[in-house]
Structure formats: structure tokens, C-alpha cells
Length: 72
Image (cartoon, rainbow, N blue to C red):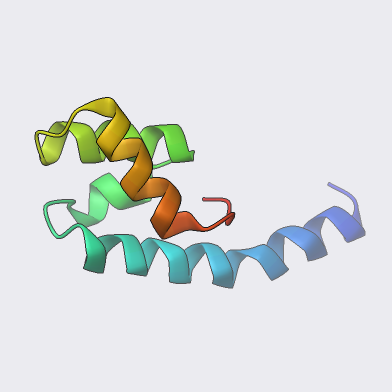
């Protein structure tokens, strides 16, 4: 990793951590392990769909509203 890439990754980490904390608060059925294993919004949609017995369209809508353009 170059210095710039490392700096960018370090700078992104607090946002990522804050968003993961918000995920755990919004969807309490997710364990800490579930939240830390999330790699993308698609993973979050799948998890919300499964844990909350929602259809995919509703889970996607909920995640999109929560994320508001942020990356996981």
C-alpha cells in the first residue's frame, strides 16, 4: 500500500466504524460479529431481509434510506 492509500484507508476507518455502530443500533437483531462481517450494502440488504423477514425490495429500500449514499 502506498502512503496515500494507507492515509485514505485510515481516514475512512472512523466513518466506517461509526456507520457500523449505527447499523447495530438500527437493526438490533445483528450481532457484533454480523455487523463486522458486512462487506457491502448488498450484504446488509441480505442480512436485513433474512433477520427481519422482509422481501428484498423492502430490505433494499430500508438500507438505501439508512445509507443515504454512504459506503459500508
